[in-house]
Length: 209
Image (cartoon, one colour):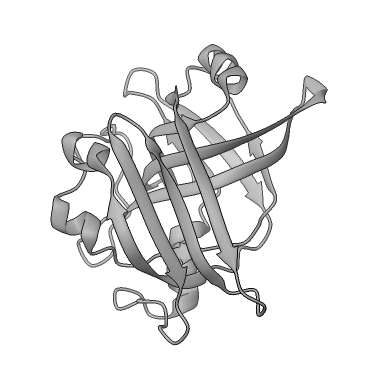
């Protein structure tokens, strides 16, 4: 709660609020005012779940984001986005059935981090705090409203994206010092995530303020 502006109600599930580490590769990113330029880069978002004071719908609040594109980082300064220019890589291996044998994200963001997972062959998604797997996926990946910034400079934006069909994964290794040094999570919470989901692809449209 101390990390989220008071104007934003938390989206509780059984008296709990989730924190998501969202890691992805952005390909063919275009800006409306500069449609002839395309950018590819990796990004990590650290976020939690809130309720939009305007619509009462579920949304997400972004603590911070790390991106590997120096150009996009420079442009983000004009929008006061909480983005940092960092270096990290994403590697993945798939078998003949297109299952993820290994997915690795590693780099340096205020400390060396490494996240390594593989697609679960028989493990189903953990949704003990939700009524159905569909409800869990909707809560975790479905919000179309986002916020960032402090209470004095809070910014709201909207998102449209294609239907996300995540696959359940199991953790092989997680090391992410920033989450504990920032005070967002305890060490045991990092090593025992409720869910690890992996979506092969999706298309996003982001409408910034």
